[in-house]
Length: 231
Image 1 (cartoon, rainbow, N blue to C red):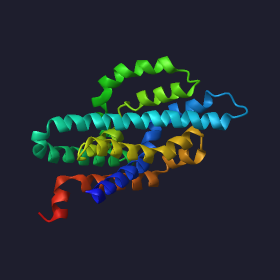
Image 2 (cartoon, rainbow, N blue to C red; image 1 turned 45 degrees about the vertical axis):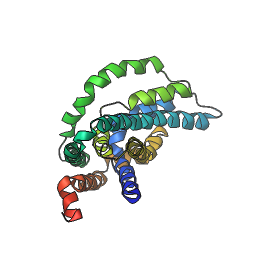
Image 3 (cartoon, one colour; image 1 turned 30 degrees about the vertical axis):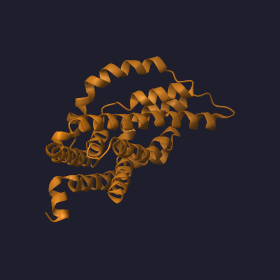
Image 4 (tube, one colour; image 1 turned 180 degrees about the vertical axis):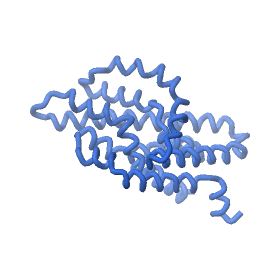
């Protein structure tokens, strides 16, 4: 079991890393704005780093909390887990494939899936105005925690995968590692790194990342699992 979870955490990290260009389009703007709101002067880099870490810490914390909530609901329905498991695995695989197609810019059908979370975001988004403009670390943390609920196909794809984990803790850890995978690009965007913007626009990189995400999706599907186990 330990090795299986290790592979899941590693894969979750890679999914976050590969899909980070999608994160830039969803969260990159707000991340960059945190830096622009700070007065330039002595200690600017320290304050900037603190703000970015707080924002992304809140965002990743929300991912883990949502996964834990889903895992708790799954646990309460444990009597039906044998039936739900293959369904959740299929959904997670399909979502990853859709995300890969979107990353490679072949088809943007994942946008229809992202609309599922729109009602929740509609209620939470007005709360972001209460912490804007951001001047303190705790405001950045709260903003990140709220922003973590933004409808995102990449997050939904990984949440479907996290729901397959055997415990609440491992489900939350899966999303934690996913969030850590998105962190390098998000921090670089906050620092206004031009190479990140170029990477986001690089067609071949997006297509390679898309193909790898599609591969993860196919690997997640129950049919692939049966072939792997030989049953």
